[in-house]
Amino acid sequence: MCRVFGVSRTGFHNWERRAPSDRALQDAWLTEKIKRIHETSRGVYGSPRIHAELRLEHDIRVGEKRVARLMKVAGIAGVRPKKRWKTTIRIPGITPATDLVERNFNPSGPNVLWVADITYLRTGEGWLYLAAVQDAYSRLIVGWSMATHMRSSLVVDALKMALARRRPEPGLIHHSDQGGQYVSLAFGRTAHQAGIAVSMGSRGDAYDKALVS
Image 1 (cartoon, rainbow, N blue to C red):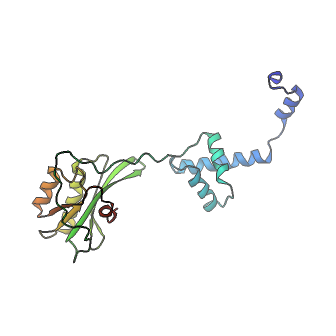
Image 2 (cartoon, rainbow, N blue to C red):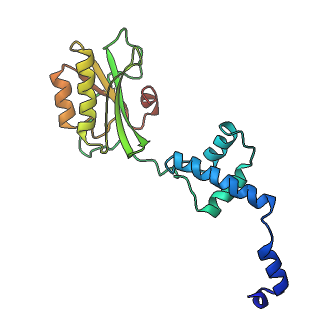
């Protein structure tokens, strides 16, 4: 091996017996700290988050590049954000409801206009979908539902919670995007039975989604 790498046997054995340098000892100590923080985050944190926690929580002054290098050597990696999933899935051939709001999100009182949307969250049990119903007057979340799927029952359950909590009078407007969950028969039937007028924004309208996002 010495002959292949072009070093003397004496030099190799001197290196082998040499005590670890201060830098190597510091790297070993830092690596243990990094492993503990990574384990505490359930394997989610990458080098930026671990670097921030070392500085803010442990008062350890170290560069992020050094943290990234030590993580790579130790085989540690954070969870990378996945490609954004689509939560607005349209059904071909289905006509969406008319836009009854036209971006006028200033109702005269509570239980006059509800706005709804779907998003997704990363949890300790994996990715979950969250459907929320918000009162446009108070900006209060009046109903919500969480599941591992985006079937129509996700938004129906959120609406049922809002109805049970607020018991609105007939004539309330429920405004959402044109997602397949909101144009489903199950959702339309639930809204109709409660005397709710269903409204949907124009296709690809980011301003409608901004209120409840």
